[in-house]
Amino acid sequence: MKRLWTLATALTLVASSASAQAPVLGNVTFKGDQSSNGVIGGYLAGPYLADLEGFNLQFGLTGTSILTNTIVWCIDLPNPANPSIDSYYSTAFSSNTGGIVGDGDFSKTRKNDPELYKKAAWLIEQYDPTKDFQSGAVYNAVNIQGTLWTMFGASISGFEMLTIDADYASKITRDWYVLSDDDVQGEVSSQEYITSVPRSTVPEPSTYVLLGGGLLLLGMANRRRRMLSV
Image (cartoon, rainbow, N blue to C red; front, top):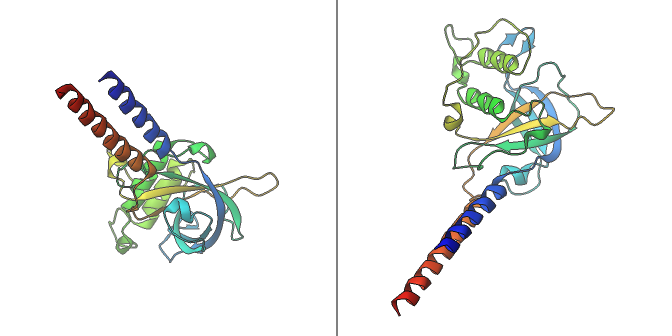
């Protein structure tokens, strides 16, 4: 029985390590504002559009075609948006078991703070485009964009600072990715973005590990019972 427990522990550790994702290097081309959603501090509020290249596998998508006009949110006001193709790292994260299991390696992000990016993800998921320009609306583009920029260190006014739900991590419903400029020496540092894709229906590698390990443990347990009954 002790051997079975040891094997189960080892499989859990393997599954945990398999779920962690290293940042993926690809290209991002900023395309501008998705639509006229308001102005804050002289800047157009998000969401924005960008072309993404090289992230398909990480996003759980087939093929290698450029993902054109992908919705992104800017979270890094001090740095400019680069309309030219620029190399970026994509860091994956999610806290729900339906998608990515656990956090990626955040060392390539500007803040290196998984919880801060999860708060941003939760906040963006509250966005309701029908509320833009409506008097008294809370989760509109201006308030969300202003809160995001403030969370990440910018000083800006002209919006209502929104409160993050205490259970934000457990309420994220999509798979999220932080797009961080690789900051190659000699290049201008570009803005950091956050984007998401729908939950993948393809099981994660860790799911296969746990499933296979569970079947193995069941087989060993049944064999042990047969041997003891002889």
